[in-house]
Length: 465
Ligand code: TYD
Ligand code: MG
Figure 1 (tube, helix red, strand yellow):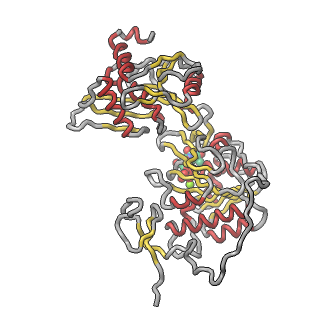
Figure 2: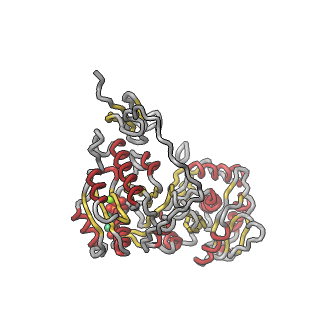
Figure 3: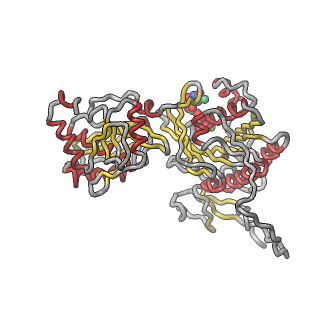
């Protein structure tokens, strides 16, 4: 007699193995493999017997396509991040750490969209309707015609959404709490999450509703368990921020209907998420000029220039292996910049602890931050403050050369808007005239020499350079 089919599924990446093992071969995580009933997916059922397949007509690219208008919430930062609003008939996944503000953002989005007309449904699997109501009341959204439910059974949810008017916008908070009768494993397992997501994605496509799924992420930033869901939906956003800071960034990591280089910036306030129209001012707030080790980096977040302070502390080490700690930037990038400063800038950092911090809790991924980091590190080592009216950007090559970076003009423009007078960076491309006075550096040795020279001049002279 055939045994009931089970398989072993990694709860992190969804890989399937035939027997239990402690470590997943596919993603390398430990203790993530559990036994589940064999997944019912494409190919899992019995093959269609005796059917040779039916031929279907193929179409041209140039055929007519009806385009429904996107759903604009009127919350500019949200509309910007989604690339001009949610698309009818699309499925979107919004991931973020617990407590970061996903539910808050989405109830605000629901209320804004509901006020513009159409049926808007918010289904919570985590909170009771009362809790959702209380939050909405605190946010002043009680009067918005949002339909609420606390439900986790996916068949019931799809049936409810399918009855009555077609919903324009549906939020499911969160996908990890849903379960389906048709799947024989417990809620929260990969099979359940995948099955539930599949049902909701199918509903979105069939009905033309925009469906948003909330997903929790693990601490290393992956959508917990169902990475598989990322492949099923049309757009994936992550809602990021540092719990100890108030600002939050909504960032697209995948978007079939728009660019992934736009971000939305919010601030968590007592009255929910507020839009931040000028993020640079937020990140530079509380900056103390005149202390060594701080450089203002003119960065880009997607298509948007953002100024942020990079802070460094270089201090003599008492340890055999000095510490290198970095918050908000890539540690291997820091190692490379330190090596270049030693090899080409003549700095001796081997016996120093190095700490690097991006202020405000922002995470920077751009190599353009190299020059600002190098300036902050040098400034801390030499013990002299950098000029307070200068911003820094530029990529540093392993040879020590300072390389041009994209969007130099936008960066300079943003800095000028915030009252900066000059930028220290690579030569501007020909034909571009920056909005700031340029101090061109071609090589890290030049940067180090200039900073060191200002240490030799007395502090009174510093302001002039
Ligand atoms: P929440 O949206 O519940 O997070 P998630 O759904 O991502 O888990 O947000 C929870 C946090 O937000 C909570 O720590 C309190 C804070 N918060 C505010 O500061 N102001 C507010 O108006 C609201 C609603 C929440
Ligand atoms: Mg929540």
